[in-house]
Length: 97
Image 1: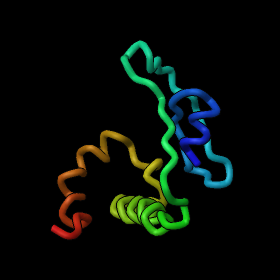
Image 2: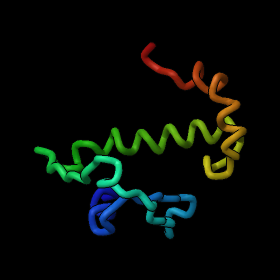
Image 3: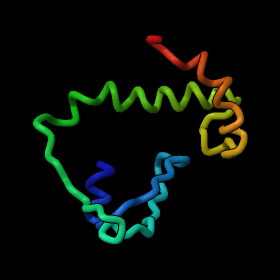
Image 4: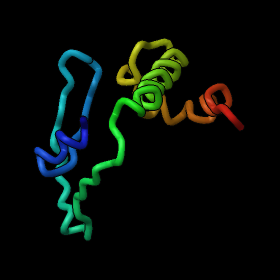
């Protein structure tokens, strides 16, 4: 869905989902051509239904990391606080290693 929004806006967007019922979508000022890039849309050979579990896992991870900080949303964590905590976040959240 996010790539569809980017295409209709012809560019990059920032999405803030702090309020799931009213996400904030902000266009970002980036000139692809100036930086030697082109926005390319590729149609995958499948549909989104097969990716539901992977897609939803991202939100599960966000919730786990939020709980580390004692908040419901990572939007409630200051960036500097998050960056400082990265070394402490890695061991409990790294899996399969």
